[in-house]
Length: 352
Image (cartoon, rainbow, N blue to C red; front, side, top):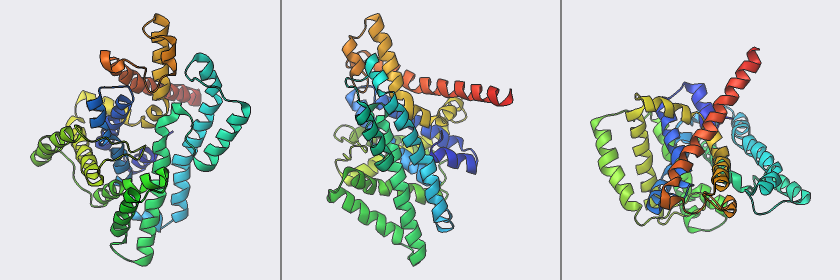
């Protein structure tokens, strides 16, 4: 199942630089969930999820909303709401099996299961810890609808700067007026979404040049290294420290990743990362499950006690003996391998 960005890329022609940027972002996301060293974790969280909002908005065009607002909404339901509901129900049905294996420390009654399914369908309720990263699908769904509404009103009112004013005002309300985690989170991330949209509509050139490299590695990278010493950011939990520094840090990381992506796209590793970028949805969905499978193997060989199976994200101790590197590899390569295997099986079945 593809995300909105993947569907957009397919329709507009493949963009290796964007695909590699997505790959780097998803690898950093997995790494951030492994119990990696605290400084590395804080560095990653400065920008890795804003990167995906930026890339999603990069391909947004006004005509998608103005010409057919109804079709735009339908596409968001198809590309974001449906995969969220589908995998939420599947993982809910597997909950008690995972409990028997030891992945969870609680079971669900049939009544609880039914209530959770109903809550997921009605309000995109995020309840299954195995799909903890799915908050991004919820957020991107509402972010896309909110931004689409802003653009639609802009064209209906013919007020040229309506989108900019609306984004700034909603950002300030989202940060300074606590309403609800979901509502405030979408408002605060709006400037990142808007900057991605602005970069896309103005066809900004992110190809390698001396100036781009100097800015990326002599300005953005040191700035991020400094921010990571004192900033604690978690977009999913609505934690940003300082709103202005959050925007600055996010854009510094996004710029660094995009320039780095163009730098390595002609290398052999760039071709592999291009493939990983096409499987971000698979990694988002299954990396926690592969964490559990790896932990189960460690329990069987006696490296971890059985209690480690129910720990989140990866079991304790990973950051002390570099097992977080192994968990990162398994969390990325496992879903990609399964995705490629399913593609081959499907292809053989179709042409048989």
